[in-house]
Amino acid sequence: MILRGTGEVMAMDEPRRKPSIVKVAEYVASVGEGGRFTKLDLFANVPDVAQADRRMRDLRPMGWKIDNYKVNSDLKPDEYLLVEIGTRIDQGEPVPKTVRKNITGPKRRRIMERDGHACQVCGVHAGAEYWDEAGRNAVLSIGHIIPVSDGGNNDDENLRAECQRCNDESRNNTKRPPAPGEVLIQVTALKSRDKKKRLYAWMAAGRRTVDDVDDAFIQWSRLSRMDRLNVMAKLGSQVIKTDGS
Image 1: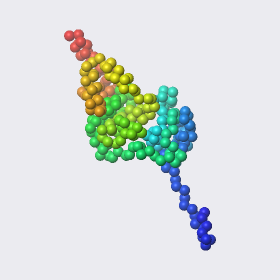
Image 2: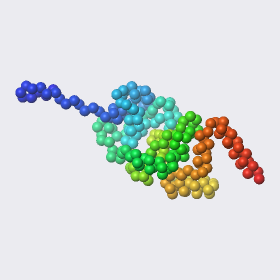
Image 3: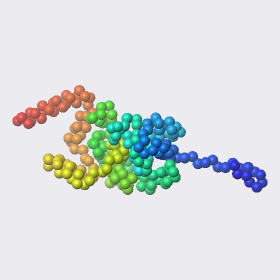
């Protein structure tokens, strides 16, 4: 309360409400680096924040390293591990200028069309079922080649179509990047000249391109299990016949 000289009483302004991402950051930070928590724990501790799990993911571009079961096999599907606390927005530190800005709808559509509506990491098409995860269909989003946390921007050349699985794995990846020498050894180890030419073409384009073999495999992976086996058996007979002639 504020008392004026005339005896008039004026109520103080209501304190500003904390942004939802700050509330989430406060809870996650309270777990402590090396601490584990579940999605239910998160929801229970910030009950007034809608989509608290999405707000938690928004912390990652600010340097918060939070593992899930996809990158840490010791974790359960609904469990998280706080590896490192990033920008302390929970303590009033400003959001870094490098944090990504929203990508406009027209740009999103342009990138999707450019990339053939296929994930540029694993090659799966939008809506297709993962060949190694029956019942799960790919949902595409726009990802960054160079993460914004490392100085990446929203220029077309730094954007690519990524399926949700690959995007989550890249954003949760806490492993050190490979050394150039390690990658060169792996590239050199490719025995087929055709494979090297194909890889070089991807490198030159700055993204993975899907050829007719990739597309045939993606379409095959969308079949039911029995249909996949039947098609594989028929192709196998052609391969055997060709090899034996």
